[in-house]
Amino acid sequence: MRRYLIGAAFAAAMVPGVAAAEDCGEVTITEMNWASSAIITHIAKFLMEQGYGCTVSTVPSSTTPSLVSVAETGKPDIVTELWINGAPAYQELQDAGKIITATDVLADGGREGWWVPQYLVDEHPELATIDGVLANPDLLGRRFHNCPDGWACKNTNSDLATNFGLVDAGYEIFLHGSGETLASSIASAYENKEPWIGYYWSPDPLLAKYKMVEVDLGVEYDHEVFTCAANADCTAEGVSSWPVGPVKTVVTTDFAEREPDIAELMKNMSYKNADVLDFLDWMENNKATYEETAVYFLTSRQDIWSTWINDAAKENLAALLK
Image (cartoon, rainbow, N blue to C red):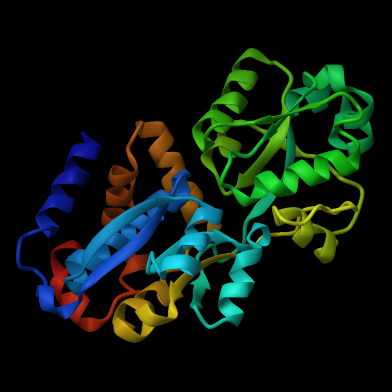
């Protein structure tokens, strides 16, 4: 019932003609293949279409392919929730003047790393350290769960897993086919109290639901090693911890010049991690789609998004701001 009421409020705001189409042209924006980014994209899409009169197309993508596309074609216009620690092309494109960083879309940054379930650490505290991981492959199922192909973290994990000695210790580096299967492997292991070790990130509803412990890798962050590890054309020879990750929204330079009002909107669209965890938790609890979760945010958190938009957009979106 709650979702129905939210959907009705969302539909009421989508009255034809609330924004003049000539106010804004066509916009392309990434819909990355993980939940928080996809929801943030649908929030932005609604505000652009209903507040600014844009015609918005979402582009299914992930970190590396999105930047390759920008480099080769200048599209999409907007790339959101870009975890730049695992994206060497980001700095190259910015230095070349092809993109502009709009904002830290996750204001607190993101946490990335290697995780094991809390129930395993409770029984075997040594598994919270890299030395314990290396010494006990049987306790962790001899499988390291890596990122899907197309995610820059796949390259980082592959190099670091080898250099830390996981391969020599007998671990298989298992490449997941999608973010969904990576997430479901954690859920399945947790429900059955089975071994699990692999890469994951926060904020994410999975780590709110299933208590995980980040493995202490025993070393400081090494920028040179980490940058090389993230690059598919560079094989890292050292080891590094994962830093707190800057998570950005970028726009192409051409787009910022063509649509300055939308570039300003994207500059303002920044979320505290607690707010992201809130709408991700709502999505999980309500078995909602990305679009429905965007509706939840738009109808419940006007206090946040109303500060992002200009006066003309506020007038167009007045039905949601009552």
